[in-house]
Length: 317
Image (cartoon, rainbow, N blue to C red; front, side):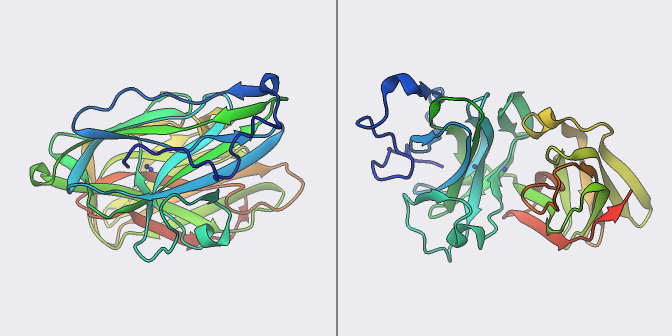
């Protein structure tokens, strides 16, 4: 939902620590150190950066995978469990002109305009703000030589000290000729809505344009969420797949991940409906990404990230 040469810190990167002006006593080291990658895998780390006290930052780091065509079968990521909000590995289109090594705020127009989908995504949580992807034997996410990627790191520093942070991922692969089923990520989402104050809901309805089998599913909202339900609508009826009846903000960082015992078949023309209910107490209208209404997971057979993004009008509930 996230390749794979060991990244070196760029001294010119935004937020890089300047020891000449920042007293060491004010700098808290929250860098994450990954385990050693297997011979068939890779480790990737963001450059180091700092997060000032009582501030929020989301940075995107760009690169390109160079190596043999492979299938990703295992993925694990690390982010500081106290101040990290989320960490993702995203797919970047070939049309992007941002060079490798670019490290800039994700809100920058050059980044935001691309609406980057997940390249890799977790199937289970290991600990708060950390997780991993484990795929069935023979199922893999294709990673080809030349695939552009971006690492997205989001931090909220609620403390009084400056943080030194660095996030990391570990990836394991199999040769491309051993892939039996090619998988990728899917997302059902709306990034086009206005959520008024008070109790309102968003009903995101995504019609699937191609058949696929879902391996897992996760629902996602933010702090104003009250309840989320995800349905599969098909010619024979409407099935409730996923529900959190009492949303808790801790689920933002450690989400409930549903794994299907047997792959869930979703046919072309079926609808994935994400019904999100909120109590907006922020004193203003909210829009994406301040709030979200998302269903996501991994499915096959699809060769590239599948992303549905539909506009939604909020209604009272």
